Length: 268
Image (cartoon, rainbow, N blue to C red; front, side, top):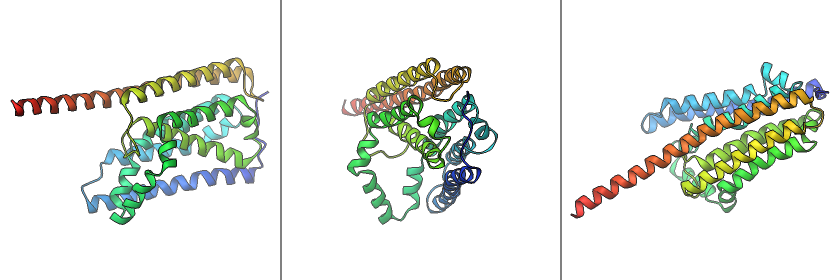
């Protein structure tokens, strides 16, 4: 039998507002920061702002509106919201370069403190591609192979926590692989490519597991359809990440090659 939403309506609304209000605040704050940054320095690129707005919109759509309502009763729609909030929204948010915008907007003293925060050991550890991948993929395995998925439909605080975690874990994972913003430590393209491929494999294995072993309370037909959506939808997102990573890799190699040739010409 499919899971039905047993969270009281008042608590369910509270869970949604606790999730959406901070996102709306972040959307407004980003636009204000973009305006301030454009006045202080050069104009902030409009496509960065569009990425941020689209990313926040995807995250909100996953918990508000028709899709969110359907996701409480149908695992297929839940999986669609999972792809939106855990995979698509993070890519858009990362390409909005929020860290760079913060550094451009803050006064020098506060910007230095922010950089010091990014260089703290705990931040360096969790932003490592391996750690970020384990946090992102491991939480998905816990959600769908334990009773957490069933419990989140009965406890509003757990429902809120799961969605917040999915968004943050997806952002951290993407941020650790695709260098758009400043990062505490840079890792080789080979390491990041290997982590991305292994994470993609783990995501596909999980989708196959869900197909054969539906989460508690999920109808088998819905589980099969949701697992197929997770498999192919995840593959599409992974192809996008691989394309971005390979493009950055190519540009990096081309730039080094150009500088090397220029240096050799100068020396000769």
